[in-house]
Length: 355
Image 1 (tube, helix red, strand yellow):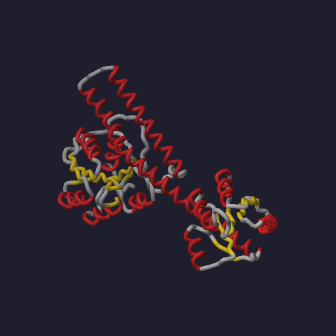
Image 2: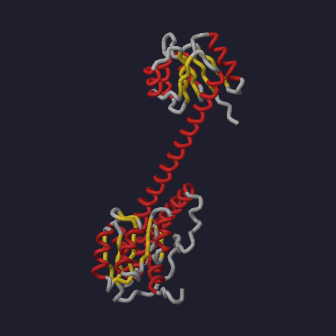
Image 3: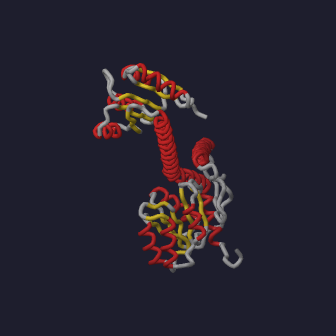
């Protein structure tokens, strides 16, 4: 059990000794100080859990000391002892962050109750602060993942496209091939670092919920069968570079691609051309609407709509809910050319009767 450290500040010698003897009975580690100046020096050198100070002292008063304590350490509990009680004094003490104040002559049992209550409040505030700090940290990691995964997907897919173009042109340049391989390895390293960061903030991130079909980053596989010329795919993605790279990848496989930057634009385009569009590739985190909402709006237009979800954020309940509501697949950013093509092909060959 933690032994709390208490700094007692009182210019009356007898009062200091009485408080030390009484508090040590409850196993507190008590340090005595006769004035505010010495108390501040001790607070700069040592870590205390509570400052118990008299109000009226020569030099630095109890109120002044409280104010300076708050400047040094915001999470130190403070209790003011006073024989000159007034509403103004109490209000000022509370305004300066005092956890409590107690009238002289001091009732030692009451003092122990007040001290225990002050420690409970400080511990609660510490836990709340830590929880808030952890939430902020997790949110920062999630946002960082998303913001890096967007351009990383473009880089990985662009590397694949360059390799394919070189093959078409029958260009064999070892140095160029080596540079592309270095770029690919570096991109994969960044992706793995992001994955480890996700695992730190969400240790169970790899426990894929039932029904979710996630695709991790892999090395390139053989090309898939080219799409039919009549197959239209709507891509709803707010990142311009990512829209372009997905369009290029799909164009190379003879798919017809329709692009939308926002959820509103995407829904309007689908409503206008639902008779043509066989698949919607939907970024789950759009500025004007979340993916689940967009999915339901698309399903309201056509209950049989096929939707492939993408996201650079962590897998969460919303994505799982979207899959439960009828989204076909989910692929995490960053993904490469082969992954998006394999997933599109898988969705096109999906047969509800045999699933």
